[in-house]
Length: 274
Ligand SMILES: Nc1ncnc2c1ncn2[C@@H]1O[C@H](COP(=O)(O)OP(=O)(O)OP(=O)(O)O)[C@@H](O)[C@H]1O
Ligand SMILES: [Mg+2]
Image (cartoon, rainbow, N blue to C red; front, side):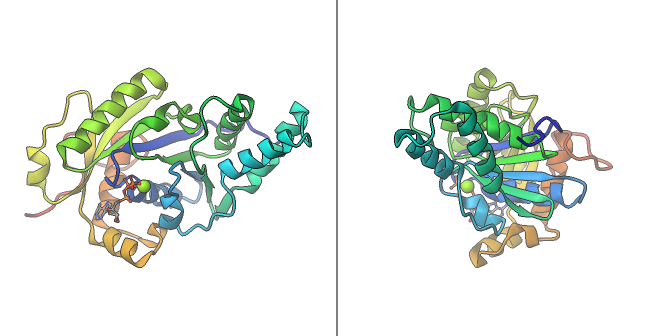
C-alpha cells in the first residue's frame, strides 16, 4: 500500500446547473492552484461526459468505473474472492489510472455506479479515492450537472463546495437547492457561489441572490475561454485572462488563495467597463 495518510487536501467540488461553466471554472482553478509548483493538484472528472479531460488536455486511458467493472468481472468469474487481494488490486489500479502532468494529476470517475449492487466494491473505491486525495494539496472535482452526485462516492470528503451559476434565475435556484441538499448530505467546511459569464457589473448588481448563498464574486464572459473551447485547446495554456483574474479573487474569498487586497465578498471579482 502507498503512504495514504500524508496530507490533508483541500477538496473543492464545483456543482451547478448544466452548462453554467463548471468544467471551464474547474480547469481554471486547476491552472491557478498548480501555477505554484509547490502545490500538488488532483483534478477529478466526476462527470461521465468527461469534459474536464479535454479542458485540461488530458487523454484518459482508464476510469474508476473501468476499474470497478474489471474487478466485478474478476469476482464473478471466481478469480478474485479474497478481500486483501481485492484491495491491493484496486489500490494498484487506482494509482495507475492517474494521468500525471508535472504537479497535476487527473482521475476520471466514469459512469455513475448502479444503485444497490456491489456495495463492498463501491465502499472500497470511495475510501481509495479519499486515500488518493491525501497525496495532494488540492483536489478539484468537476461535478456532474444537478444534485444527484452529492451523495455519491467522490463528494464525501469535500471541504469547499463551489456552487456555480450563470445569471439565470434557474441557475441560481439550482445552486440554492444543491446547497440545501449538501447541508444535510456532506460535511463541508465552506461553501460559496460563483456567478459565471456575466456581461457587466450592472448585470451582477441586478441579480437577486438568496441570502444563504455566500457570493464569492462574478466571472465575466471571457473571449479567451470561448475561443480555447472552440479550438479544443487546454485551459492550462491560458496564462492570464479576465476570467482567470476573477476566479483568483473568488478563491481568495473562500480562503484558498492568499492574495493582497480584496476581502469583501459582495464586491465584483473583476471590474468591467460598460
Ligand atoms: N466565463 C466564460 N466566458 C466565456 N465562455 C464561457 C465561460 N464559462 C464557460 N464558458 C463556455 O460555456 C460553455 C459551457 O461551459 P462548461 O462546459 O464549462 O459548462 P458545464 O457547467 O461544465 O456544462 P455541463 O453541465 O454540460 O458539464 C462552454 O462552451 C464554455 O467554453
Ligand atoms: Mg462540464
